[in-house]
Image (cartoon, rainbow, N blue to C red; front, side, top):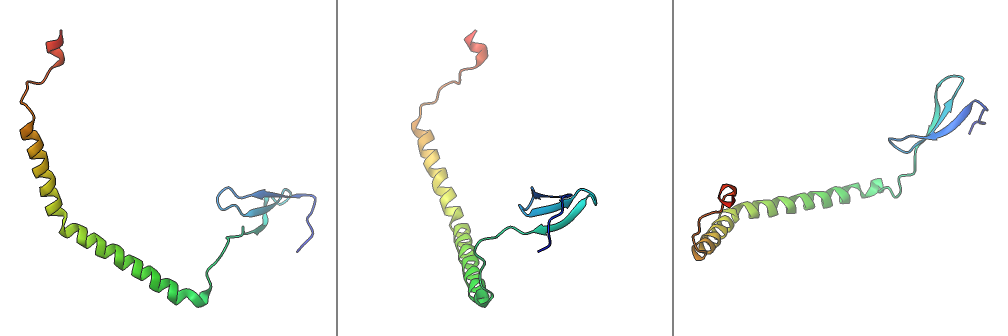
Length: 101
């Protein structure tokens, strides 16, 4: 690593949190150091990771298809329940703000 000059200073990038070394004489970034990204998956496990993601996507899609198939039944049940509740409530004239004066 090179020696740091007096005209250089470090700052953190607000976007990616990398450490930027800026030279005030040149008025530009002369070096940057990427932040540690934590645990990275191994390239040798790529096939397994892709297979797991494909299985997850397939499961989500199957769940979505099943929800669409039963959607009409669910909506009709909700409508019948609301109709039953509306039939049990007494019919009253709604109160308007004008009537309260």
